[in-house]
Length: 187
Image (cartoon, rainbow, N blue to C red; front, side, top):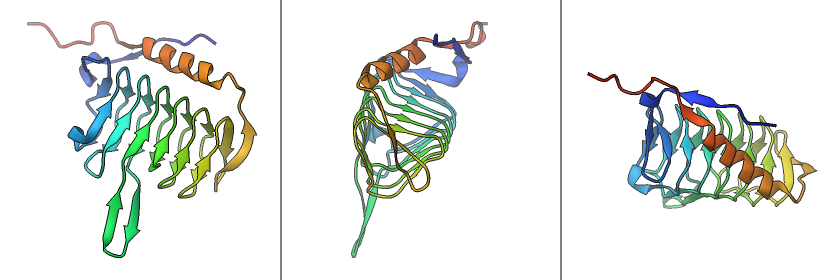
């Protein structure tokens, strides 16, 4: 299926030197602790909590609008400790999803309205269906499909998942374009 062009108002996004496109309507707390490895799209109304711990997002990722990326935490007798959140390359996270995982591997697709429990580990090449709620510390094996509430394995993915996700994220980035004539007005 051919990807259609998606146009955004140029004034609503900041494009970095490494090709990241970050919405001005997103909230990046503790931006000094957030690393975007390049050609990543962060849509409007996202919240990325880099003030709690380091967050690293790989290349060619898409973070849907209304998504919250929050580092996982663990309660101890003397307080709470936050741990880094690492998102691999070619990851697609749909809208209105909350991610508090320890690690999201590469070539992963997370659907809409999901909750990824704290310190969960999503291995490479897996898929989380829309509306899934993963319990804390869930491990999602490679090439599996998780769905439901609580999330459990409901299917398997083909071995070509890596190539499919690479093509999907690359195509989405190439077709995510500034709308013609939406730049800053010239004087």
